[in-house]
Amino acid sequence: MTETDTMLNAIAPLDGRYRRDVAALAAYFSEAALFRYRVRVEVEYLIFLSRTPSLTFVPPLTTSQQAMLRALYRQFSLEDAQAVAAWDRRVNHDVKAVEYWLRERLVGLNLEDWAEAVHFALTSEDVNNLAYALLVREARDLVLLPTLNELHGVLRELAFDEAETLMLSRTHGQSATPTTFGKEMAVFASRLRRATADLSAVQLTGKLNGATGTFAAHAAAMPNVDWLTFSRAFIRTLDLEPLLVTTQIEPHDTLATLCDTLKRLNTLLLDLCQDYWRYISDGYLIQAAQAGEVGSSTMPHKVNPIDFENGEGNLGLANALLEFFSRKLPVSRLQRDLSDSTVLRNLGVAFGYSLLAYRRIQRGLGKVAVNREYLLEVVRAHPEVLAEAVQTILRRAGYPQPYEALKELTRGRVLTPADLATFIANLDVDATVKNELSTLTPEGYVGLAAKLARLREG
Image (tube, rainbow, N blue to C red):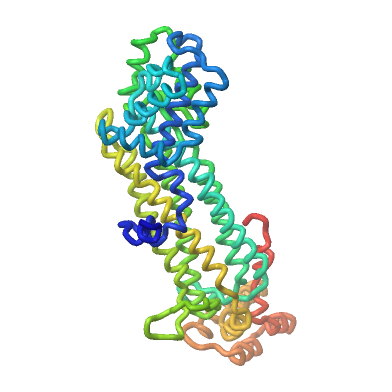
């Protein structure tokens, strides 16, 4: 079966239609990847056991022997995954399958003397929680964060390039104080920078303490070992934050935090998708027509904002899963139930829909151009936005009830420049104030928008 055939027969679109967009995540969330990360934990645990002098039944491993062991996960192949899967079918236990496969490999490496130290005193969750923490962290750091940083760079470039490009604001969908397109992009860039930093800062935890979190098997077999210190030290070698007091399972609290943080980041990008859809609908942005692309099956003129619509939909899917994960995973009956197992296997789906959305948004940003001339026309066509400026200046000048006067002039009607000029001419204020008011223009009423667009904060 060819790759195209496989994609066409996939049940889920991430492994079908969108496979090429999210293929980078297969190295972290596929079944083969999960096997590889479990092998990694088992191998590093065995090496750590061999380095602990008080564990006399585990002989020290030479540097070359350690390298051979690490090669088992660093060079883990599809054939290796298939061999582990064969063990899984035989014993119907995916973690035990990894242990049996690893024991076989030790024999092949002339390391059978260490076979009984493999998975020593561990429960499956000791291996699983560390494997999931590693794969989630590395998928975040090596796939999501670089993609988000690229997207942030595009938004920052737009903020600088369009810092002085006038744009009519809309509050409650109505005309409001003008801004610049660059300033609006700086808002999204600033939000994305903060959200990305929050996502990067989430420190995942791990546990290694046995079947009910009591170190019972460890202490029974080797009572003279300081297992608390051992557990802390081993988990820190994986660059995870150790948890000593748990039930059988790592409680998933920090994983829930990561899901919530990613959901908030996705929400701000969903906001961007909806704003871009509106900008395109209002003619503020022009979409580049792609050769051969069809926008409608019946209306030949259509160039649809499909990338932003696709991004919005995929972000919604990702957030639905992320919200479920953060609500479900920290809850487990008594010392544990197994309902988290099947849920954890879907972490990659949420990451996949997130990554797909980021790529679609970035592609959409590359296909639009700012319609500067039209934006200027729109601003000039709304002199009523100067009502705020006029009443504020009149307040400074001591004019009585200026807000009410401007409200009566402007609210619920179409205001023309001539209407505003007549109003100013009839004001009982100093000539200098009238002159100041007369020089106001919608296109000049943008405050510090350009300066804000260029702030390094974003």
